[in-house]
Image (cartoon, rainbow, N blue to C red; front, top):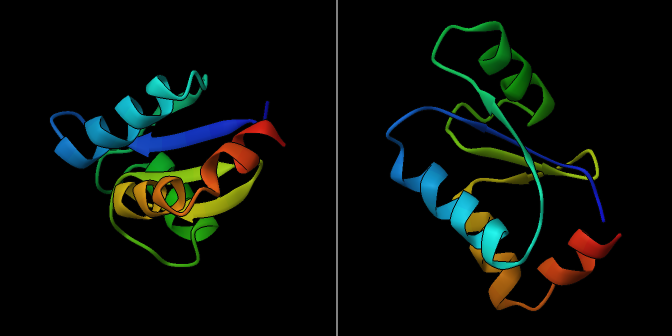
Length: 85
């Protein structure tokens, strides 16, 4: 299974939605706390090509985007292949 990293903040409904989808898929992931102004948030912004929102999700080192992007991949039938890589 691909390595999954998800940059989040507490009390974020989009973060919770993305984590719930990954959990339903049986995927294990590393959650990284990335509050505004933190070194982790700066890393997420750099890795994602400048996206400043959370969550920022990376599968196998590839920037996926946020919760809506993750859900769109699932609806399109492309998420399972990414997770299995």
